[in-house]
Amino acid sequence: MGFGNVGRAFLRLLISKETELRRRYDVRWRLTGVATRRNGWLADPDGLHPLAILDGRWPTPHDASPVRNVREWLEQARADVFFEASSLDVHTGQPAIDHIKAALELGAHAVSVNKGPIVHALGELTALAREKGKKFLYEATVMDGVPIFSMFPLGLPATELRGFSGVLNSTTNVVLTEIEKGRSFEEGVRRAQAMGVAETDPSADLDGWDAAVKVAALAIVLMNAPVRLEQIRRTGIRELGEEKIRSVRASGMRYKLVCRAQRRGDGVDCSVQPELLLASDPLANLEGTSSAVRFDLDVFGLSLVEHNPGIEATGYGLLADFLRAVCS
Image 1 (spheres, rainbow, N blue to C red):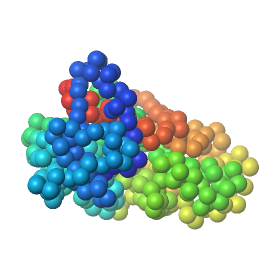
Image 2: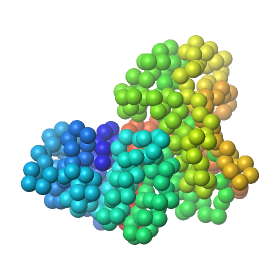
Image 3: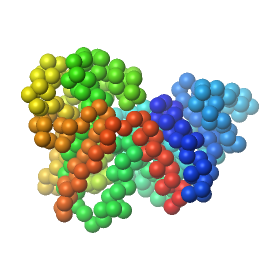
Image 4: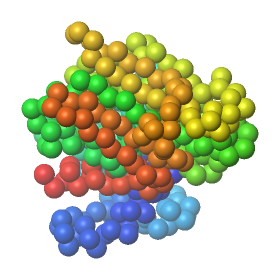
């Protein structure tokens, strides 16, 4: 569902790793459905031609049985695994939530790159997946292919996450880095768009919404905290002046859009806002699309850094969840 930069990167990875998937994991796959706003609902249980799809050579839908909605599409495609990569609606999580519900109800694993369903319907979707004996996975929603969500239950059992901080939005990091180099705010945005990390409308990134949804997702999943978006203090980077960004850089400091969450009694205090960081702060040294997060556990601290990922890193997050779904 959705075939933008992420969907295309994922399909290219599936093609390039097809032999490895077969030899190492005994996994064989067919692309049986693609749905986009422009091309509509395409489904063929015998398999669509992935290279043709990547080249923009879309088959004509069968007139005998036109597909009108996600359920008919999934049924016609006979989907075993459904990948949700539609645009994020920050405030409702729709229609991604309904797409995932339909997939699970029809007996398919659901893998999402969309953060909205985690923030607005995690409990419902997780319960439905359990009831149907399927998986609802979402590793690629935060830091692309870095195994954050899968790391905690498997690699960090019996730990308590007391808080975290990080730089989790690539677009703002690229824009700030470009401004430091002498380019304008608009040029920085165009650079992020050319790299494939920013949408045509980058407002969700620039105004801090994307980062806020990621903070909520991490807090909900890893801290078991029912965080709502309106509870997160949020400020974007639009109000930072270009000269201010450059002048602090010249003095050895940098602005970054920093995400924070900290347990306070029975709740979790969350924020997203530009912060002026000293050069000695590890977050200050992040360049371009790089992102990082520090987890403060009851037994130790743990930091993860993703160095200049491209859109392929997000595609890999989908690939990793695909294997978790079908190989377990």
